Length: 373
Ligand SMILES: *Cc1c(COP(=O)(O)O)cnc(C)c1O
Image (cartoon, rainbow, N blue to C red):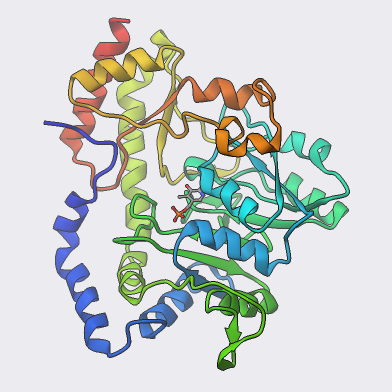
């Protein structure tokens, strides 16, 4: 038997009737694109967050890209973010013609080191793009202060943090806009691709609706300024509506897995140098990923793999070290914490329907491997 880091089949098993009903609801509705389900999900996802506007799109990458465009970020602008993220964060900045600027992350919680942001600001800086990584939020107060002082926009990358709270505020409600992904593995995942942007701004909402629909508004078939085809599919929207009603349950399920891991590993972790996830001050973690760290990561993963447990690394190559971003000119060693973490982090299996016996198998195997190092 192989244990995978993520699997949707146990959830599908439980929710099958509801999910198939969602599909049938759309097929019988007589409207397959931008219909009742997309409108319904947008209003419900905005309502969950207490934010006035939600515009759905086809995936999380395009949520970031269209949000940047709608906020007016483009060529010549610099956007400050991190290199310890999914490449799409940076691809989206690149796609609008802006320049990504990286700050290092903190060694304890792997989140953007907000103390380094001020030094990265130049006259070309237009926006700050914090990534709420692995399921917990970046410290927002310093970013909000810098944004006010320098007239910068704040776009939150919430692809990994649906339902996470920071000092009581929900991820996605704190910036000028926020981008979500509903890729199947995410805390709120579709059965295919999906994404959304939340914003407090009426004008940003309007621009996003135009950008996702070829650049057309009011008069169909007339492009005002060129846009994209970036619509969320009705079937995915209806599935997401059903699953949004269970988001808080999913989060509770993830927290229960995290607690079981922590309880089952704490003593051996302390004795062998395995670093368990740290909760940053003021955060409620939703555990999109359960990321641990050890200097002998590769040996540990190889030995677990031999026992049928295949784990993931998020992310093994920091974005600034990728060939595709060599044009940004970051030398090896320029983001020392990010680079060191990339060689040590790995993720344990994490999803709300992860069976308890599988959690215990993972704990047991990891304990054995660590003790025998
Ligand atoms: C998943 C992810 C994205 C991209 O979302 P897609 O739906 O896969 O395009 C962007 N940023 C982060 C941090 C992500 O984890």
